Length: 255
Image (tube, rainbow, N blue to C red; front, side):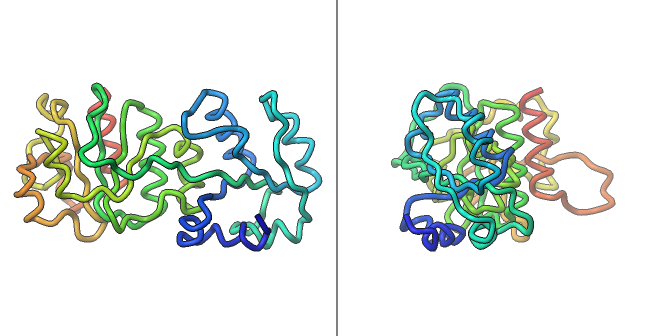
C-alpha cells in the first residue's frame, strides 16, 4: 500500500474501502502485540504492517515477540509527520486489518453469561474510548453499537481506548429494533427509574444507553419493553456524562 493511501486511513470511507485502520505510538503498539500474543482471534501477526522512523526500527525488533519476521517499512520523520494525526508523532504506526466479524449476523446468539452494552448513536470519540476501556477492564462484556455511531476505528477512539479496542468483542450497525429478537430483558437509564443498586438490575442481559444529547427515542423504549433504572444523585444537575454513566453501571454490575 502506498504511503498516500495509508494516510487516507484516518478517514472512515477509506478504512472501509481499504480494510485497515491505524494504531499509533509505543503504548498502543505494545497493547496490540500483547493482544496478538494472547491469541486474539481477529489479530494475526502476519497481517500487521508497521511504518517506523529510524530510531524505532530496533525498538520494534526488540519488542516483537513472534517467530515470524515483522513487516516494517522505514520512513522519514517528515513522512511520519504527514502520516500521523498527532502533533508530536512518536515514530511508529501499525496498519491493522479491520475485523471481519463486527457486523451482526441476524439475531446472533447470546454468549454464555456475557452482558451486552448497547450504544445508540454515540457521537463523541472520547466517550467511546473511555467506555471501551471500562468494558475491557471489567471483562465479560460485548459492545453493541447502533448505526450512526462514531466509528470505533477512528484514530481518536483508538487512542482514547488505550488498547482496550484490541480486547473487546464488538458488533457494529446493530439496529435498535433488533434487540427485541435477542434479549428478553433490556434495561435503560431514566431519571424516574429504580436505583441501579436494586438487585434486579443485575438480572438484565442488555443495557441500553442513548445519544449524548437526545438519549433513546421514547417509542423505541416502549416497543422494546425496556425497564428504567437510574443512578441516584443529589439532584443538583439533570444528567451525567455518557461515559461516566456507563462506567458506574458496569461497576455496579461487576460488584
